[in-house]
Length: 338
Ligand SMILES: Nc1nc(=O)c2c([nH]1)NC[C@@H]1CN(c3ccc(C(=O)N[C@@H](CCC(=O)O)C(=O)O)cc3)CN21
Ligand SMILES: CC(C)C(=O)C(=O)O
Image (tube, rainbow, N blue to C red; front, side):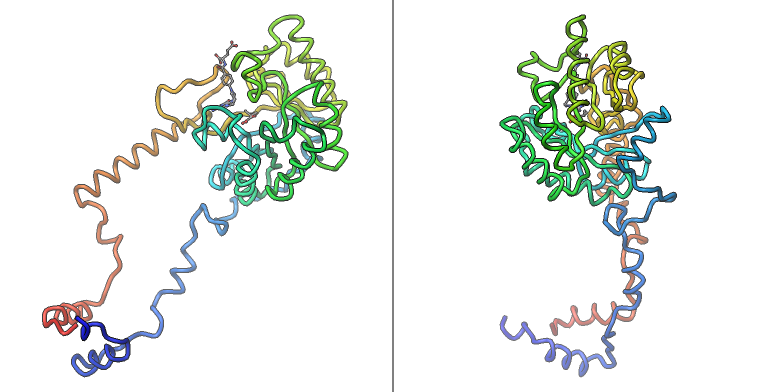
């Protein structure tokens, strides 16, 4: 056994004396070109967008609002999902705490913690070259006191590398929103259906369906506006209410399940792109624009079939070797010298 393990120079000597001439190329031919073409579209070295656009800032969003052009917003939870949303031209990319459910498999959004949100914000921020990025403050990271909220917001911006934060709540959150905006961090409000409070709301229920309920939505909207929010998400409220609230405000409203009278729209990316198995429950407001699940399923099943039948890998997926080198290798193996 022992004499089989040869030091490199001994092996070299053996090869040279037995099968001269053997040339060991100092560098692999083609190595440089391989490096140059080896760029995953998911790597930070991925190709730049075909039509690069200017960085979206708070001023860009204000300008869109002023000219009544709807603001487009979409969630992303990691580098690839942010990369595609940014390339597709979204104005805002939100690292929503819905990632608890769609990316981490949790029961609801109350389970995700600040550190997890920061990790996902950071990976989204690395992909987002143009869109304005916002990170959600998760449940428990901002309700105790405005100081706690500011600390969390600073971490999301400093460590998560996003440009603004979102937090749920209306009138009662005004002092907190004020504290964060005074520190120079843009805050996106979120009223109507606030999923972090689903236990208090009795589930994911439409809000503002009664006169009093609608009045509360308006009061909350006005309160978060006065506290300094640059925009507010209106979730699951009747379209008429959302429209009227939008008219009454001087900041953009971003609707989800709130009709087309809002200043912009947001959807959860996995919902709108159809990246979920058939039969999953979808809220009424979701329009499914794609079938990412179906496409992935088809591709993975085809790969399985190919591997099982040895159709993959085909010769074009393998690395060539000079026939002479292989013949020598075969001889070596046959003669059991090494
Ligand atoms: N994948 C995903 N998409 C979302 O839009 C989303 C999440 N997750 N997680 C956090 C919240 C929860 N959301 C939801 C979830 C369910 C309903 C829902 O069941 N709505 C009922 C209305 C019930 C009523 O009439 O009160 C519906 O039928 O659409 C609404 C919003 C929106 N957010
Ligand atoms: C649905 C959007 C607005 C959200 O809050 C989330 O993704 O968590």
